Length: 353
Image (cartoon, rainbow, N blue to C red; front, side):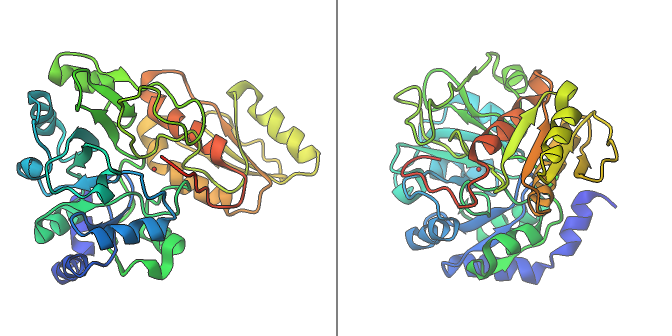
């Protein structure tokens, strides 16, 4: 039995209908996707979208990604759609690619953060697609967690994080990809990756015949985009995806030594390793992640949640290879390190999964 079969069987048709009815009634629903679980609301219902911001503690001017049933819905949400967008939609939808396009009239400011652009994608998960088809419109769905914290990759994570703020959580099993979608800006002449993900610059270049640029990082948390006309998007703050436990990235050659030193000073230490063997030190909580990028990404957020909950004073993470296939994961861990350790939910005044 395939993953698709198992996920489809786990959510009955009547539960999909109930979820669609709740969305029409302005309620919030936890929705599985192949990347992370989303906090879903009717993207055309401003009051419902407002509940997303309230439940997450998310800055009100921060844009949301709209999930569509299929690419035929593009014209309802975007205008002046470039041929590159259509080619990429054919190649990668359903899939973990979000396209930033000029928004169509009628798309609420609450969804776009007041910008003239909107983020759109078709998720590659049978439960999400069944819900979108039943709803037959766009669903706004940022990650279903408190703003700035670790994204959820199981239904249990959503329930733990948001509780009764969500009317229903559809359980589609663990997310297959495990990190958020690639965000590609096609609203200007030059395509720019605003957030790396499973769809790489090389993947995009093979379809459109030119390599997208990479977004310049923000100078500091809450700063405006490095380029004045670059859209604000999800997951672009310096601090994001963060555990409450302070997190440090340590080169592989020094990982065991640094962890042992911290433990020797009386600290409780949790370790996320990739290639380093567990030294069987009783002072350390040790987690070995898969050594390949896809496997590592799939389990990343679940591993960080487990280590965050183990009562450690520090989480130390083995540094990753500086190669393109690790870029998206390195991006998430770098932001997690910056945002970790305060024990509170970060609420910057502007901009941000």
